[in-house]
Image 1: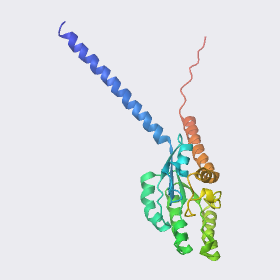
Image 2: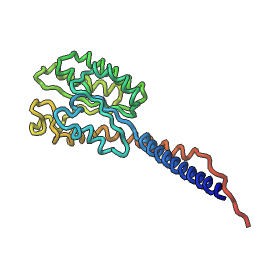
Image 3: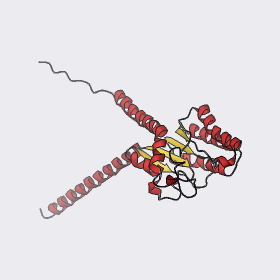
Image 4: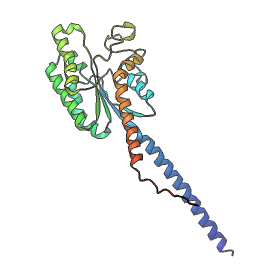
Length: 243
């Protein structure tokens, strides 16, 4: 009896430990499922999306993440000073790494400020749009405008690039990212090019006019898929009780 009791106690301890470990594994799996269930949004832009000159947490991209924190994983891969050529060179690796459900394409401003030919800019944007499409991701095109001191002809050709691409690829399209703030000096930084922290909620408001419907479409597709899967599950045989 003195031998059996310690062995029995050891077996009970091992059983309890296994149950606790199993519960921990199940909990971790549940957390992973929650993370994996979120849709991934990749923001592919320049300083206007990278929160240049302001705290990152106040930028419109971070505000977008906060708004959809339960549904989206927003990855901000924007780089200050980025051109369409630079964005194109980095994009394939980013698409492979992040596998985004939705890409917000916001590039071209630095091409314009550098006076790069609009034909080159359009070629680069076209290539990025095609890469995103080939990856199976949805996309939204966020346009920008440059100061008129670059000349009427150049600025018109510059803006038309976005219009033509949105039409060609039938993309959700915001013609001017800074529409609501660009002419308000109180909402622009001293360089006259970048919005202040106070301007970011308004920038996000404009972005949501096109991104909001795209996000809702993504989330709606997920709900539809779940419903279809449930409908396709085999039903248990009904038990009929007769008297």
